[in-house]
Length: 404
Image 1: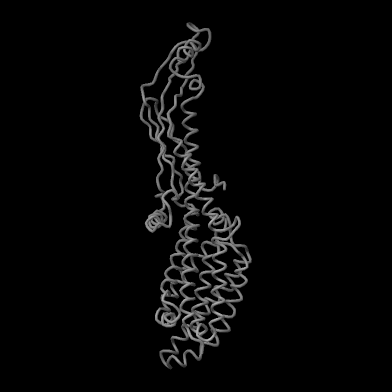
Image 2: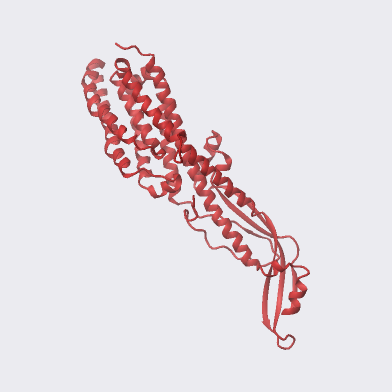
């Protein structure tokens, strides 16, 4: 995957002020306000909120009924966070594609915006009504009023929409599918489906599990597992290239002038230098939210340290005093060969420095982009893992229910 043109360009590089002095040049990209950062943060926020919702509902179907009434305000807030951040992600599909190499197609986006979000809104509205009736007329009257509407307006339509959505095996829509699953099973529990018609609920779980497993680890070139593997391998390759910038070389600078009194041609002042290049990798710090997310993902081991987004710092220093030669061009070149190789005589120090810095610049872009990609891909993996754990817990609790 070629990401050379992905992030914003570097500022102009500083020229070495004077040979013979220590010089430190930092090859860092100006990426603090680049849109990929906002997309990554939005995806991470969605996954974090899905985790809160599904782990909160972890005790299973029996407790879900109580959770819906006791924690509706919290659920509404968290679903709103998911909706807001998914909106940010879907509004910047170009950047999303650069990060995960795929984007939801227009059919998927319309299904989400026109159907999944609508059913989410219907559920929250109906449950607010349920709470109002519950407070005045009791649970029996409240359930009698809202269950028919939950069945027809939410559950039936949601299942049709997510069934259409799940014909698209794209790991980029894992958060949308997980959100749909969460709403679907909240409603199923509310209408007592796991108790009265558990076969139907189990089939829904089967469908979600099959879809998540296929997009995450399924065969073929387009699974999430394959995308993570390829991007991680590429990231390691870029790191090796950055490490290879640690080197030592000789170079020259030449200054010509006319000297007709002493030389048949030009007079030459030549400086031969031995330069040490030190390359160091530093984690991205320019965006505080991303930097905090990197630390958190490293802490919980969802991101390897070699996968994190980094920039390349380059330091130039001189190992020994410059060797200076002055005189007629032919004589200077001949004398300098004893100190500088033929290759060094043909390489100017300024040109060599700029080549190294340009390479470091491109590697910084690649390593930053690759790291952001891995953060996004591994967040999607976390969402899938959380969803599968939620479904497994639901299955276990539902299997324990007795049909009436």
